[in-house]
Image (cartoon, rainbow, N blue to C red):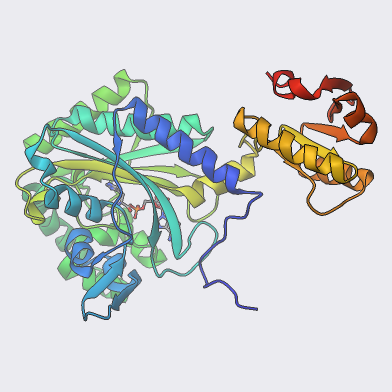
Length: 414
Ligand code: HAM
């Protein structure tokens, strides 16, 4: 037997309705907030992510699916959605049109990580990216969009953490203070953090190593180093969230694992699904469009991991049940079979879902099958029914049986 690669998952027919549920809630939420779908390729030139996500990140250093194609180009499967959307925004000149531009996407992503519950090598994101708005109002709106989506799909007991990691300017001072603090305990840091100490010391605050976590505990807070502009932005965001009735906690340790963030960063975290509890994360990235050659245009967005949301919703059992078949026509004999074919075709044309027997089951076995596939109604069609031009339609839940004229089956369902 050929098996699937480690860290991937099939979505089987009996479970696909859960995905459709999440995806339609994502699309509906995006519509409410006036975000339009953008679809970018599953693979890009490696440079898009190396530059976009950042050379010092775990994603770029260790986790990318990178290969050389037959033309000798370095290609990478997208590890996240933002960099490709920014590349597309710039390449297609969308910055020259009416701003802000609000986009959303639902996409597979690929990271070579150690698989565990809620962490896969192929996973899916619902993401939103907005370009061309600098005001903290859009930060609040993006967080509100994320919250609306989570509420719509029935996520409960989730905590919103927010932070500001400032701009390039205020981060200079902060890096100095942080490095001064860390230098005394440099030897206790893990190897990765020793490397981060030089390249990107803030990422040490995010390390999962217990020793590094303990050291990070008393590190200076970025919030004490924000410049006036970044401080005012963060205060305005909080006041807008309060006005909108959005509860949040400030967590100065949130720095996020990608290099492009500036000012606002945020995460929605659940305590109910184990170690991989961050179901949604995002923030502002004011320098990224410029990095791709698109001028000084700000950006902000988030992405939610659909597998993690499914873990959460599955454990709560809150996804509405599958949309079941309206009518299963159970024919007896060849003439009835031909008629059944005709009936199901006509019903489908009227928007009623219908199915019938193609494997020659007896009537009892057909009822059993109809029950198994969750048909709401079963229509019995034998020689007697054909002679009288009727079909006996039984409602499976109640057992109620109704004789319906063969010319009026569609009406019965209206
Ligand atoms: P991220 O925090 O790397 O951010 O990923 C966003 C979400 O994707 C995570 O919160 C998690 O739910 C899900 N996720 C990440 N890695 C995995 C994995 N290996 N298996 C399952 N789920 C995973 C970004 O990707 C940014 N692009 C978000 C963003 C958009 N920021 C601004 N705009």
